[in-house]
Amino acid sequence: MPNAYFDFSRNERWGLLILLILAVFLFLMPFLSPLFTSPKLEISPKWAEEAKIFNTQLAIAEQEEDKYKSFANSYKNNYSNYQPRDYSNDTDAKTDNVVVELSVFNPNTATKEEFLKLGLSEKVAYSILNYREKGGQFRIKADFAKIYTLQPADFERLLPYIDLPETKNPAQVAQADTAKKIYNNNPNANNFNHLNPNPSEKYPQKAKNNSIVLDINKAQAADFEQLSGVGAGYSNRIVKYRESLGGFVRIEQIGEVYGLPDSIFQRIKTNLSCPNPQPKQINVNIATAEELKHPYLSFGQAKAIVRYRERQGGRVKNLDYLQTIMELDDQKKTAVRIKPYLKLD
Image (cartoon, rainbow, N blue to C red; front, side):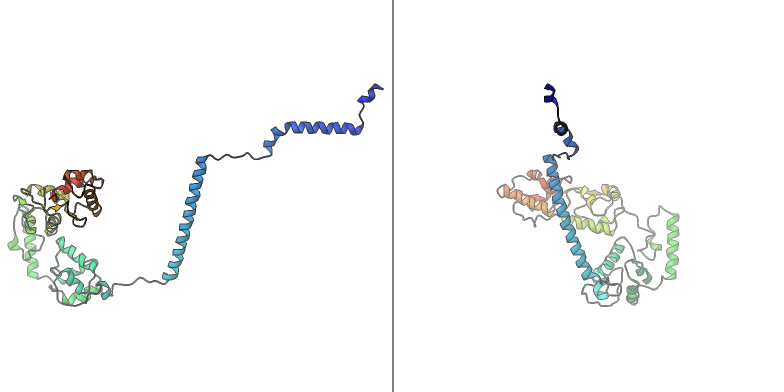
């Protein structure tokens, strides 16, 4: 009879088993849940900021891409049938509204304006002038065709107007050959001009005078041509640079001349002098940025000087203070180089 209390029916036993299984499942749930759920990612503030920046840059890139596509479509619609213009036979276009006037000319002496009036482009005119500046000479008509930018059609059109012989005089050619042979056999000869029928020939050349000393502020272009390695082109550039500077204040400025090789400057350095420099000076206390125009100053640096003067009450008291201006504190030492060309009164 007492055992009846501990006797379970079949249904009760199944119920206890289910409860036991549920209890075990509930006990193990915290340990099993990570297997069935994705871990929560935590984004640091730094990553969030970088992601924001990236999204912003991506949006800007997409906008630029849209602009490019719009421009490409517009270009395709407007210029798909564009054909480049042929200027080789278009005289009027090459001369930019210059009236073409065919007349007799000597390519050794004609000016840029004269070449333009002949119907040549500025590019061709500059090529001719550059060729002459480097010592080139046109001795016969055929030599004019050596200009590489000159179109064959232009050469044929201008051929009757070139004021040069058709061919070299045989007698002159023979004498020139004789002069060349004598010059080659006598490298120390100073002057064979009496044998040279054409002084423009590169041989024989008159010996340079290496004993002269030139005042770089007074010498003319012809004077500089007496120096070794200095031709008409370089000598003219030296004079023009002196004028743009307002005068030289030291010999080293010759080495700043555009295109002049340092080897030539070092060779002629002993032939140069600068005994009494008196450069043209600009009043820094009243000059505008435009009036401060100088090879040593950019327009931005000129404006910086004007701003500095205004901060000083409208007057610079000492030129040495210009070195404190940030725009003049560069590797070229602009403040030091420009100082001789400035004044305060």
